[in-house]
Amino acid sequence: LLTLMLILTLAALRARIVMTMIELANVWRTYRVGDAAVHALADVSVRIEAGEHVAIIGPSGSGKSTMLHVLGCLDRPTAGAYRFEGRDVGSLAEQERSLLRRHRIGFVFQFFHLLARLSAIGNVELPMLFAGVARDERRQRAGEALAAVGLTPRAHHRPDQLSGGERQRVAIARSVVMGPSLVLADEPTGNLDRASAHDVMDLLESMHRGGLTLVVVTH
Ligand code: ADP
Ligand code: MG
Image 1: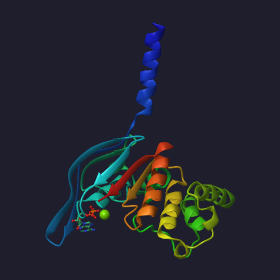
Image 2 (image 1 turned 90 degrees about the vertical axis):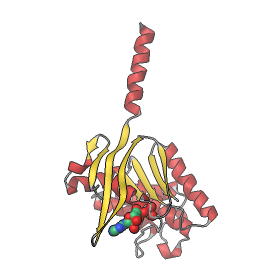
Image 3 (image 1 turned 30 degrees about the horizontal axis):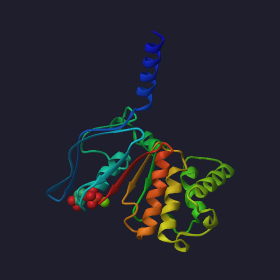
Image 4 (image 1 turned 180 degrees about the vertical axis):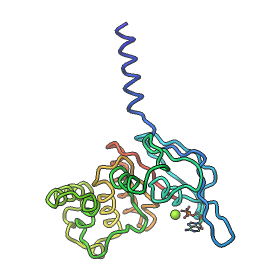
């Protein structure tokens, strides 16, 4: 009986740990251009469990970025349902969606999207500024995030004083500084030489091993 109870407890724990993070059900995203309709996403159904590392692969124009924007609540499906951590995001108000984006989801883009006039540490602080984190705590957490990507010596450099690989590491530090559960990366190595691309993927993979759910677009 004791063994059975133990097995049931473990099964219950496991059920809680392996939880569905993302569920797209029959999702469409249709762009209208004049009279034409472009179905960037046509009836997509997919499920991603917490802790998974998923690659979205396809040729240019196949809808990868569109899918990532929908997953990251930067865009809404034209039709179909999107559940994130069990909540129907389609029915959330814009303010709730932006809270979700800010606290649960990190983004990494092909062209880094860093602010040119801010230093590396300033860029990493930005999400916390929007979230209303106090100045001292911002500095401290941004410093830790930069240390985790090996960029402490570059903290006060502006993006134009950094290499491509370093810029992407800053962007990765920024993407995780709020402690998200999910990181979405859109061709994060598409603009990097082979060695930097390798470093960036290593870094993302080590963050995945640390518990993040990771969805990476690549072609
Ligand atoms: P990928 O990232 O795989 O290259 P995208 O998701 O960017 O593909 O685009 C998918 C399709 O949707 C393409 O055919 C593209 O031309 C079209 N598309 C993307 N964004 C828009 C837009 N804002 N307006 C109209 N069509 C768009
Ligand atoms: Mg794209």
